[in-house]
Image (cartoon, rainbow, N blue to C red; front, side, top):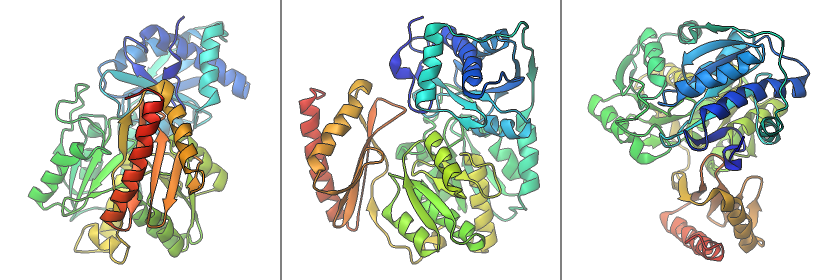
Length: 461
């Protein structure tokens, strides 16, 4: 069958439903998934778990995917609608090794996709290309039987687990904005069970995302949350992306606390009982985050962006914590080492409660140097040209102090700039940070001028 190369991305499969991503393709992905496990680990699983997000296309893709898997003779545990972290959780809770989450994450509503786990690790890069090759070659492995489908209520299981692993949050007032994604069926219930006072926003799953798009990296998507925190005089605001593996946080004054600032809070808590632990950030994270981790006695490591890549690096390094500026937070301390925004929000609330009154986040940054920085900025760029643009852009900064593990992070005397190709969208990702607003504007001007020249070269403008 015909398949678009561009939907097989670095750490997942993602495309427009009905155009690039069809039910027929989902069926073949199910069959190829079992073959890939056999090729990679020389085994055919007894059963696998499948979850889906709230997108309108998810149930159709799920049914086709399950058909492909069961025709190979493998049983499926159907988790139905749930956050991505609960599909990961099922691999540990149900004593299985493999599974697929159907989710378009933070992409526009017409998109959908697959996050694939083999041996409890989410696959990426070459293994995703191998999956595509198996489909092209129709190299499928099947047992002489049909697999069965069993439903499992992973949501109640997860809620009970969290209730046992966290103490009372009584006294905290928390606004929870689920953005009509999957977090709404889980997160508010846990906070309520832990006796926090919860103000809910948009908890009902709705694949049309009628209130705002569930992407907490985009400032405008946090406006409702910021406003409600101020109105209610809440101690904390939590916003989730569509599949609840990323969070956005708002402090008691309604200001956004990006992922790299949250990492300072989490690192301090973990390092207090685990000194000299390794903690991983990614190329978009603030210089201040790395400096603070070192100052607190931790070992900071800068790595590539991407949930699969960071999870692999955590295993290699034995790190207890990792995080991305975009709100993916990974705990290997008291947890399983994958990105779970609901769990991260509970850890954050726990730290606030433990710190005593007055409750809030601002006190955690007393004495931490302030830098001027931008959010993550996305610039549209065709998939087939975005990596070429980054390589050409690098050539302008050969004489600078740079980090090139993922795109290019250019160090200037009083700040830095990052340009990298998004692995999930036809876009470039840019971020700036500097000691003063004036320094940041100067850095922006240099980068934008060079980027303009590269765009002209590739005839993108």
